[in-house]
Image 1 (cartoon, rainbow, N blue to C red):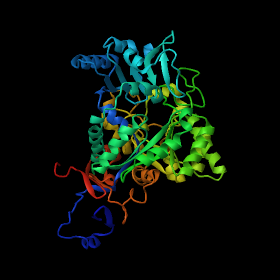
Image 2 (image 1 turned 135 degrees about the vertical axis):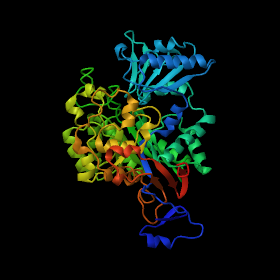
Image 3 (image 1 turned 90 degrees about the vertical axis):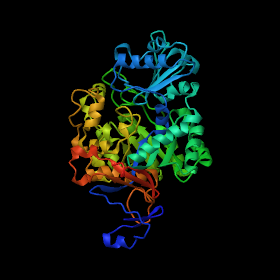
Image 4 (image 1 turned 60 degrees about the vertical axis):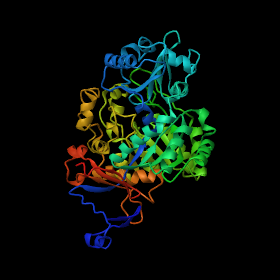
Length: 535
């Protein structure tokens, strides 16, 4: 293959490539490795992730006492008047007392606000001062998805479920500092480049959009943005539906550059199973009788799909429970019956009822999910039971047998393990094929996945092949983002978005795929990461 400027100009045999060699040509010998199109993370949260990494990092494997001791140590070492903020506690901790409580944080510091995101980003933990500054009281209503856990007297405990309910705290504590955010985001995006990524779909920045988007655009204008970054306008409740497309239109008129685009409405259709906010057709086993909730009505979703179609926007729909998936398919079918064919991506697609599995094959929406989610997790099985547990992440066959466009993304930081381990594409590829955690993930979780974590997650018929997983990380992601005409495959005329791996995945035992590292990443023909000399 030959690259000139930012484009691929030749793909073929060695003899034909020689015609492109000149005195200034740089040659790259794969040395037994593998050349791939630049990888695409089709669902991840680097904008929020950059914010989280600016705070105190807790570890998901820590138990209650370790978490509290780490927070207390940090508070003691940092006197003053500012906010204590961080991320990383396991949302399954403190179950005996009904979840984390403000009193535990008040005992560490009552006069300064404390707020911590859980490791998956779907729960928050605030002390009394943070609740006070946010104006959250016994009279504060819960949003449609998520809410405030309360004591017997109705007072909020400080345990907050889902981002819509956390927004008042995030905004009140002014967690986005423009002076530090841009460099923090750039550092994080360079880590994506070091893993082989050249395009990233940021699946929601639900707060602080103006300063955050300004920082991104400035990076691209300076030539520093190392990836193509696409982002969204978020809908989390009925209140957001009316003006969502108009707001996206206004954002798009203010922001957008060669590598930064905003053209998608993201609907958070429900929550997650771990905090019992995923919307189910049948109730949770524990606590019994609860179903979770849908964020918006099916009529509103149909309205959004039609508006997006007319405006030329995509719709990205978060669905964890089988009830939210049914809602999305009902809405898509309604639009199709009326002669419209909106572009709909279903994100996660965790639990699928049998009838809706067949509808997925017929309706063929785009799908985006996460490889390292396709593993056993005891807390989820306890919540929904073995029967539904064996009907999770059923899209390997949809890709292979029915031609659905299935893309893979990490959903970091709403994923397993601390740090950036969850982003690693080859861990996700291996997990998607074997449906069991690769050794680094199993070690990092230190038993928190449950006693049978190393066994494959059924149904094994839905495992990806290697070719399917690589397609899901390249051309499928490009189709989802609408950039498949310029990237996602190695083809003359496309941009030179490429990555070089140190091993040939086709000759590597599947159990060792996770050990593969990226040696070189090009985006638009420019080196964004080069580890060859260091090796």
